[in-house]
Image 1 (cartoon, rainbow over the protein chains, first blue to last red):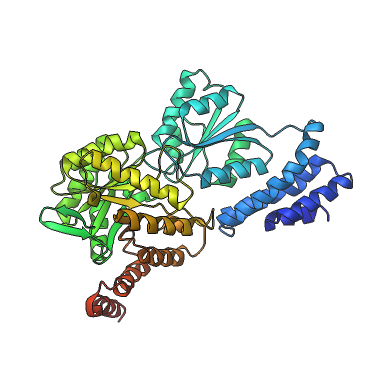
Image 2: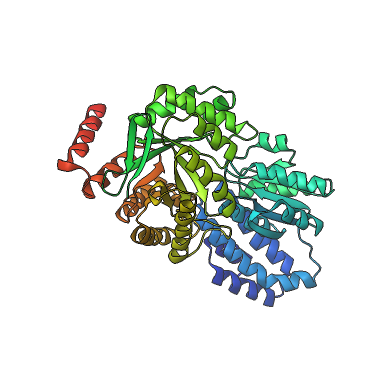
Length: 208
Length: 285
């Protein structure tokens, strides 16, 4: 198996094959960050692209992300040893009062698949929990809301960040079915992303 | 058990012993740009058009949601309700999580409304139930609580029990509580559909209350959603679903529900089915 096979196995969502491939590549002496970039991250980019184009569906994305994560787990010790840094640190969650997690999970997985360190705060996340994540070093706060009735908690979180004196130190991006670019500007978020793969592009832009 | 909802002298009875009750979902600005834009400006013409079309398509109750980011929800929800009352005699389901908006809408509603919805979270129930009691409304209770959506049918039953119990503490009888067992998407967990069906079975057998479902969630993230949605609707009706928040203007939904009514014994001599068939044939002729 070579990097191409690992790449294809991620797209196919075959975790066992990905693990076999990663182990073989490591044994052959391929650098961990090369496997990460050229196989895992490249594959998740392709998965994201297919999803964006309507060719891939949610379960396919979930299973590909799972395969990617199983490969990433094998690479982690080598990446740490080699001093390979994450693309950035993101804390993500669905806002207070809202229990929808699929979109948020997809974004978290895609960010992870793009080399970000992701802290998943879960659903129904209190503004103070986002504040705490920012205090602990998150560079980006990602918020999701699927209900018109819970969107306003994005604004409450932004205010909590402001009150804690952290707003200047952290970038805030938002998304979810009722959320729009205009709403992001209105409440003073830094960016809006309509789906999981554009969330990756947006996160990169915010930190560049 | 019968849940009665009304508007002036028009009454709708939700019951396992009668035809299925369709709650039209279209008056909701989420993902509907034109509706959202007009509503935000206080123009309710699209709302009225949606009301008319859904009633024509067989809606028995109309759901009304006015959640637009940054807008004054109490004023908009009240305005939307009043605008619908001008053009329709169909009872309404007031859809909001904002207690002020709920109150503003209930104040101008001449009849027994349905409230969409409360969860079993104490902080929600203590805001929604007193208003339901004050205005004599029925309430959809969604089976989530402080710890989220329970993962097993038994745990969901326990949450349903709590909803019915707490409602009765506020003087609301069980027939005025409709339980929503929450259909999560099979796109994220392929067992999700089955768990909801089993929960409905348990709730119906123990509590005997009417059951509601937002039945289009179940197919999120998958292709050919309509087919999944109508198949699920049929499976759920067989397990005791008596009402659903759905789009009656989708022909497949309309015909599936009519077929289910017939198959569940709620369409004597198949007259409604035949009549609907003639209407469809006439429309395509």
